[in-house]
Length: 439
Image (cartoon, rainbow, N blue to C red; front, side, top):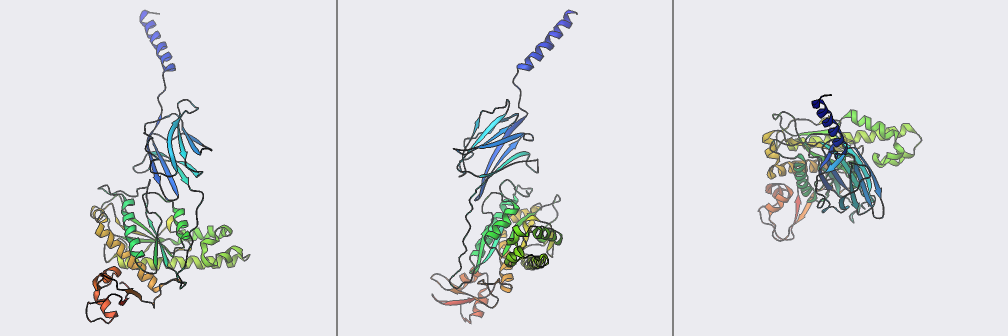
């Protein structure tokens, strides 16, 4: 062997020896951690360079969730992550048993129901590991009736997307989740200002609620109507206009088959006949009652959707002039009439600008409110304060004028004067006015 060959041989041996004792570089890394607190749960999202290879277990006294990421490193500061969350006391590192792994410990305030699952890259996000901490004890909400035994009509408002799910993103960086929440809050104010109506926000902040939980929360609050607010998007920037979606017959029939198969467990989804549907040994009777409920809900959803389209076309362009049936998880409830309102195309530059405009958001909220008022004026639920033959009344208080009252109830001064037989705009403190329905 020549001198040159010996040198090359020695170099190769040395290199292999060095590689054996060199610290290995992690194949994966935790590049970001986001904590999303919500009323019923907290979601923690770990952004990773590559698909996570992980394991986890919990420890008690004190309560901790331990997650091991194999062949990974963490480059995120952990000190401030849990500062605003009531369920997580602290997130810290600990020594992992396996070489090359990183161990993260979540010190928890209580014993929560935990789900852990990976998510593949989607949209603006790469590989992720998601941890959900759910409160175990859920206090049921007691519904109290007024002294006259008449109840409020409850409208559940779903602001589309939220938290980890931004929805569609406009060319100027507008997040759908933010637009929908602003419109939803404006709509809630309008509903709550009307005697006989009550709004329930399914999402009141920047957090995510899964589709099944949306309908569960609506049902828990005894909702008479569910409205899901969204903003549409396509790859093309040309499409524009609002549209209203209802559940497709195919999806409704598929859900119906599942309900009947599980009627012992899910009879509460089928309204007043639920107890009969659950207990009867006559399957044909169960199917007939459930089918009647399903058909009523679908018909009511479509009827309300038509009211929404009638009002939306007064304030914005329509993309679809009739309600459209699609298979959507948020609309699957068999006992609650449900619609999804696409308020415009966030992918259209002009409409993105409008959807960011507070005045336009208010117009959309006003239109949806008028649809609610019009629909329930003609279709008041049993036992509700709303009735087609009843007129609302308002007692004048200090500082109020006829124009102020007209603005509050979204009617004209002329309408107020006509229905109350007024010859001037002057009103007095304590005077009782009849309020016509808004058009």
